[in-house]
Length: 197
Image (cartoon, rainbow, N blue to C red; front, side, top):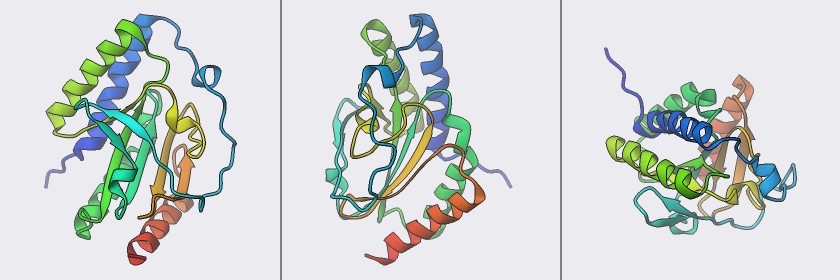
């Protein structure tokens, strides 16, 4: 029996390789913590509804507000850490499909491309757009570290996952390669959000 990789997650891995190469060509990358004020280390997860406005590879602007009424899963990754939770991404994708949850959830893959500008930004946008088109998906592009600031507070470096309830409030957030206990908590939180509908 053959298995196929979920398109979003395979595309994110491919994008990380392209952006890594483009950043190398452009010289030293400005670290996001130097370019933007750092967010508080811990933010309340039951805060007011959050929103973002990010460019999509299609050229459209996407927001968190537009998916109110659905649970949102956000993957926010920089180029070095895209593979950190690869197996978890496959497990999560399979969970959504096996439980018929596609009409209740929206998944956003967000490429942390903070610090790329000028010609390198144009090259990165074109390369990511090509990959997204090949996989038939859209990827959001965070050029200025919007998700690193409050109320999101994602670290400037790493692979982050967050769950948002149907009102747009962050209910779970973790960065790094998830431990077994963290994965259990992620799925527990997701099931709670689904039952709360």
